[in-house]
Amino acid sequence: MHNVDYKVTGDKLVITIDIGKSAVEEAEPSASGKTYLVSTTAGAVPLETKHCKKLSLALNVMAKR
Image 1 (tube, rainbow, N blue to C red):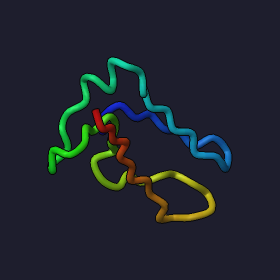
Image 2 (image 1 turned 135 degrees about the vertical axis):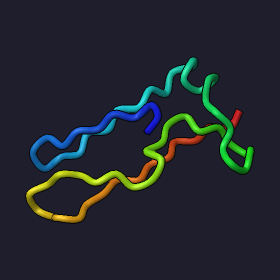
Image 3 (image 1 turned 180 degrees about the vertical axis):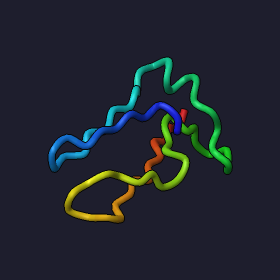
């Protein structure tokens, strides 16, 4: 996981990602090289919730420069 924080608060999933100038400028190129990966969970991450036993989060935030 890179540049992503998350938490489950009650029935809400709260995601925090730094999208500031330095975070975008320091982002690594994607596998294709067409975009830059500002933030990623690097696949599915399980989420704890009382309403669903198999809930997960998969996230990529990409930038074009």
